[in-house]
Amino acid sequence: MFENLSDRLQNVMHKIKGYGKITEDNINDMMREIRLSLLEADVNYKVVKEFTNKVKEKALGTDVNAKLSPGEEFVRIVRDELTELLGGDSVPLTTDKNPTITMLVGLQGSGKTTTIGKLANLLRKNHKKKPLLVACDVYRPAAIDQLKTIGKELNIEVYSEGKKDPIEITKNALNYAKENQFDYILIDTAGRLQIDEKLMEELQNIETIIKPHETLLVIDSMMGQDAINVITGFNDKLSLTGVILTKLDGDTRGGVALSVRHLTNIPIKFIGISEKMDGLSEFHPDRMASRILGMGDILSLVEKVSSEIDEEDAEKMVKKMTKGNFDLEDFLNQLNQIKKMGPLENLLKLLPGAKKMGLNNIKIDPKKMARTEAIVLSMTPYERKHPEILKASRKQRIANGSGTTVTEVNQLLKQFEEMKKMMKMMGSGNFKLPF
Image 1 (cartoon, rainbow, N blue to C red):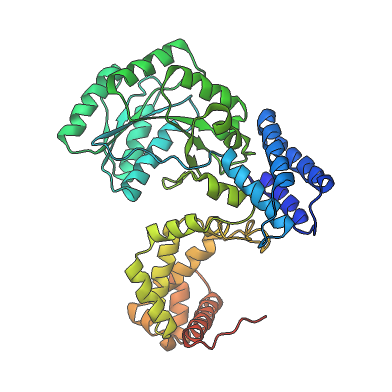
Image 2: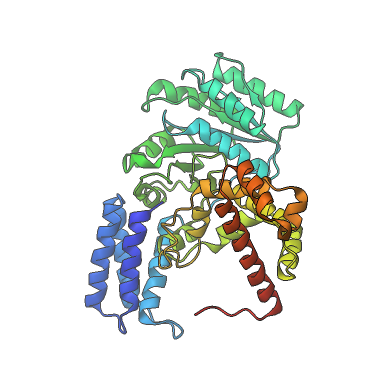
């Protein structure tokens, strides 16, 4: 996500931090590099011009904060303006109506049907809602079956009447939702390869009948600047309340995200960050600006960890670790918690200075984690509690059972013992960093 832009801007910010004094000449140099970085990221040229002009004006006209160096003050200005460009304040999804009705619209291929499943999953998980998915894409082959498959995977009900009139389907779905205590209704509408009169007329009719609290446009971020035309086209006919940008985890330059709000005044509400069903994230302009400039995103990291790990269990685990009572059963539980949070490398990227520490391009082999898990699972519950009893014959049995070697079993046991010692030292206050 924004990899090339982030690298370029971070290099510029690193250079400006080294300046003892900010002059008009070195600001002009920096603005030239920032301008090129944004244009290469496919940001609209008008947006780039306005952004660079604002940054330059503020950098030359501001009084430097006594607590910040001139370079740090410039970085602060860039971050603030980048946040403003991305939308300023985040705009939350409406969730307080009963039932709340949200209609998703978009062109074919934007990822709309997959996104509606991700959104339902997020609403159930983060907002404790009982969502109902409504299949109204009656034209695309297998669209209804795709939504049913997603619903089955997530254990979320899908309302479908087959290839009937979408307007009648939505009316009946609303009655069904009220009768069965669903408090959030998500309507998957039809798309086309391009905006046409028939598509917009149908969507307008549905919108008029159901009066949704949210009408969200799903856009493939890899479309580039043409996405602005699509957003404008939909917004001319519908009352769009927000945009969902999909595929930001792919090979995308990210320019559309930096242009949408400024050019259309439609807020980005969610971004797709992976293909998995938990791969949808609420969009926060300030956090995204910090991530682009290499400042990390601690708030998102904390939210991610908090949503997956029970606080009481975590406190108990910390006590066991610091007392040296941590065993392989606990270790296995920790592995399972980490797996719930998704790829570990994605979490590392949220740390401040991840690029400088080499964490932004780190690759963690999921097969290695799977082998580690297999080794522990091949032990008996007693062996996990008392790994000191593991001698040659037991180790051979564990290696055979896990499809690994005795050497790999020994490596895991050695690493586990070293980790236990370090945790105990940290708990006693005797731990010192080795540098």
